[in-house]
Image (cartoon, rainbow, N blue to C red; front, side, top):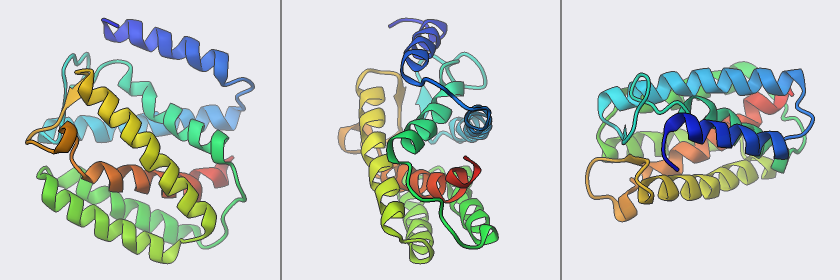
Length: 188
């Protein structure tokens, strides 16, 4: 489908048809996640971690400004589960630490190594069955999103990764899953 605005319009129509009854808190999470990931994606594009083939603003297509909120709400709606317990400061500290490699490293191998170690550390702290469900679900969703996006020419990664997608996508999407449950489920 050509054009970023056309894609965004179609996404919004699909979401409106499938996400019935959004609460104000869900809308707030949607907006906050979109702002956070738009900033992170713009920084990653600037560093050369990946590039979109048809950017609109700040190196991103307009539809990318709404995608991560959708992914997170989708996972929360699909998986739900009990609200996690534990110290919120630990979750926040690990989430911030986990984000650092994605904001500072551009090379695929060091990014995979650093994010893998940090995801393993986070899973050492938080490893309830529901945590693993969120991690696994988001990795599976991430594989669908990443390979579809790359193979359809929406974005590209440097180098010659298998299938065009570097392996650090596993740790990134897995970490998003873990912190979606540990941070965002508490808000809803």
